[in-house]
Image (cartoon, helix red, strand yellow):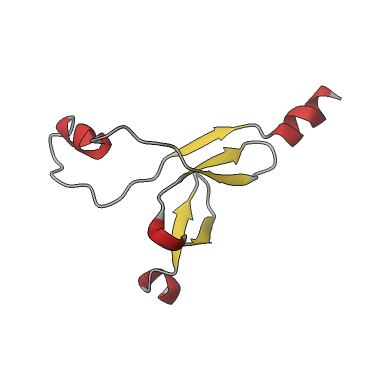
Amino acid sequence: EMLVREGVVVRISLNNAREYYELVPLGGEHHHHLVCNGCGTIEGVAVPEPKGFEKGILKHSRRFGAITSHAIEFFGTCKVCIKTAEV
């Protein structure tokens, strides 16, 4: 928790009971995650977000006036699990 408070690592919750931690990249580049439903492999991916993405989300909200952070996860099957299933 101290490393989270100091901004060295970030906590990631990925739709399961576990919490993951990863180092904050130099420059703080924001990224999202791909998670394999088969083996649980997690990969960070830089996905360009449309300009004004968060402002657009707020326009659809009746109760929120500010977004402080966000996380988007994509769930699917990794190449290894796909190949294993084909055998």
